[in-house]
Image (cartoon, rainbow, N blue to C red):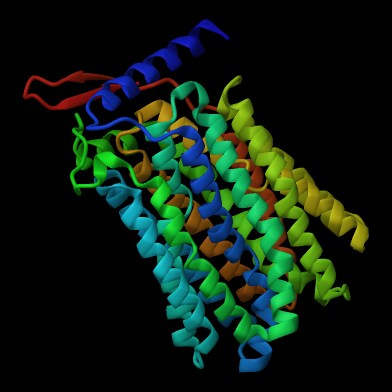
Length: 431
C-alpha cells in the first residue's frame, strides 16, 4: 500500500477510534449487521427496481400519459433523496432501528395506496411521496450508517459492497417475482402483495438495533450537525462526489424505469424487459461486491472514474448495434456490473474523509444529489418521449453526463480531514 494512502487510512482509523470510544456500548457483530442490513436492502431495493413493469399496465388502465407515471416516480426519487437527509440525521442521533421500522410501515401504505389511486394527484402522493419517504428510511444511507459505526475501517468498504450486492440480488430476485405477480394476480393485487412483503423489513430492523441508542440518546460527538455540514459543503471533494452521484441517479433510474417501454416500442416482448432488469440485478451483485472489495486496496476515486467511463461506452454501443434480445441481454449484464457499484466507493470515501459520527446524514446529502439526477432522468424520459415519440435525446444526455462524472471524480482527495480545536472551543478542519 502506498505510504500516502496508508497515512490517510491511519488518520481515518484514529478518527473512528476516538468516536467509537465515546459510544456507550460495544458495536454489533459484523455478521449480524450484514445479514439484517442486506435483507432489508434486498426487500427495499428489490421492490422499487421493478416499478418500470407497472408503467404500461397503469397508464393504459387509467388512460394516463407516460409523463404522468414518470412524474410520480420522479417525485418518489426526489422525496427519497430529500427525506434521506432527515432520516440520516435521525438515525445518527437515535439509531437506525426506529427509522427503518417507520420506513417499512410507510412502504406498505405507499404500495397499497399506489394500487388504489384513481387520479394523478393521489398516485403522485402514494407512489411518489409515501414510497419515497419509505425508501429514505430503509435503504443505503441508514444501513450504511450502521455499518460505518460497527465495522472497522479495514473491512468497511468490503462490508458496504456486501450490502450493496444484497440490494442487487434483491433486484434479480424481485423483478421476475413482480412480473409473475402482475401476470397471475393483476397489477393492483400485485402491489398489495408487495405491501405485505415490505412489512417484513420491520422485524429485520431489530438486528440493527444498536444498544447505545436504545434509550433514545445520541453518542457524544465533537461536532454538531451544523459544524459537520459546514465542513462537508466547503470541502471540494465532497462537492465532486455529489456531482458524480447526480449522474449516477440520472442514468440508472432512466434506464430502470423507461427501458421496458423502450424495448416494447421496438417490438420486443415484455419478457425481454423482465429478463433484462433481472440481469441488471444479477450482475450488479458481482459489480457492487467487486467495487467494495477493490475499495480496500486501491483509490476509490479511480474505481468511480472507471465506472462512469464504462457506462458511457456501454450506452453508446447499445445505441449503435442493432437492437435484439441478445444485444439487450449483453447490455443489461454490462450495465449490471456498473449499476450500483458506485455506492460502496462513494460512501466509503465519505466515511474515510469525515469519519463515521455523522455518516448517515452526510451520505443522505450525497444521495440527495443522486436523487435530483434520478428525478430529471425519469421525468425527462417521459416528458421528451411524449413530445418527440422517442427516448433518443435522453440516451444522448446520459452519455454526455457519464463523461462529465468521470472528469468530476478524477481530482477527488480521499485523505481524512485533519481537525483542530479553534480558540473559541469549536472545531475547524484542514484538507
